[in-house]
Image 1: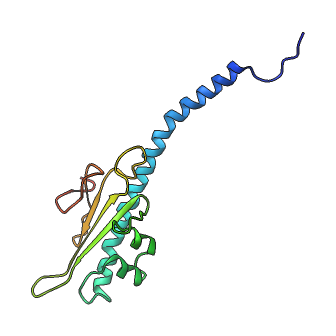
Image 2: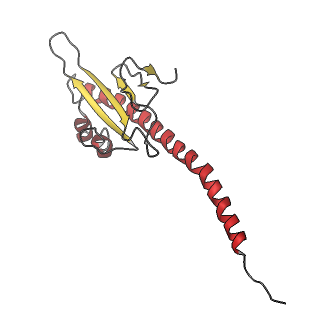
Image 3: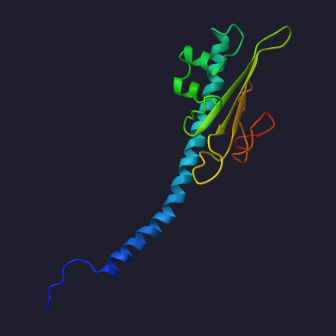
Length: 159
């Protein structure tokens, strides 16, 4: 009688199939978790932009708000967030940001708004599920889809 050691080919194939099934279940959840984490990071960045714009305006801005590079020069935001712009094409946690400022002129007050959108909006590798917007009011607004552009007309987050 032979002394069989090891596994048969059928046993190995069954193990490979089981690992494949587990991976097929786990990978979509992992990708969804990553998109959710990217969205949470974007919301925090929007909060940071709002608070640093207020600090900049009250301090060195002389009543005006600053662009992302101005905020970075004053060490109010890091260079990675300042460089995560649509024009540069470099994302921070899967999102690109655009800071728009308007200087105080005549009877008009200074204003700013920040929009963020996922760097990739479709496919398996999309980096986020929503786009975000914040302005001087401090209300963070979001779209319901990644491909839309958030604005002051978008729904506030949490509503």
